[in-house]
Every structure is written in structure tokens, then in C-alpha cells.
Image 1 (cartoon, rainbow, N blue to C red):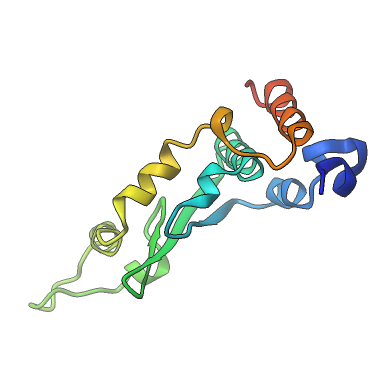
Image 2 (cartoon, rainbow, N blue to C red; image 1 turned 60 degrees about the vertical axis):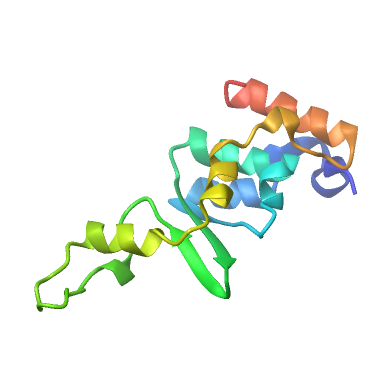
Length: 139
């Protein structure tokens, strides 16, 4: 399937994800064991939109039968913790401890995603996304 078949001549800026992201404060990026989402052109476009528009991004994955989430600020789950002596734990400390188990290599792939090396199943789709990024998001 080509982007033009899905979206007509409007290109990526007419995609449902793009329009939804315009209204959202942020997004959740789910990554698999191989971080495939970091190698796909369309996903790269979405990440460019998130980054250039200053949207909040949380990243989630699973490893060793456990879910892991990195958030830009403390999440609701990070509030209300106490240490072994009954002293309140600051939310930022709880956030740091919660995020400590996130597989670093997967997060590294997210941080070092490069749109120019991303894969596209169709060369025309690649060209359309690259043109959109260059014209609307500063390349």
C-alpha cells in the first residue's frame, strides 16, 4: 500500500495520526525487542512531528516478562511511595528507580533514530515523507 492510496494527495500531513497528534499533549512509543519502530520511515516521520512540536514522549517496552516505561516527568505511579523507614520518597526519585530497569540499548536506538536510514516499503512513500519533513519541519 502506498501513502497516496491511503491519504490521497494530502500526504503525511493528512494522516489520522498526524491530525490526532496535533490535538495531543504527547505520545506513547511502544518498542519491541528489536526496536523495529526505530527503523521504519513512517514511524520516523511521527517521531519528527513529536520532537519538532515539543510533544511529551513516553517510551514503553517489555523485557524479561516485565513492562518498562520511561516518562519525561514522574507518572502517577511515582507518587506516594515511602522508604523502609516510612519516609516519603520524592516522585523524581521513584521515577528514576522505576526507569532503572528499562533496556538501555532499546532506548539508545530510539534516541539515535535517523530518518535518512529508515526503511520504506515503497520508494515513492519515502520521497513523500522526506519532502514533507524538509518542507514543513526543517529537514
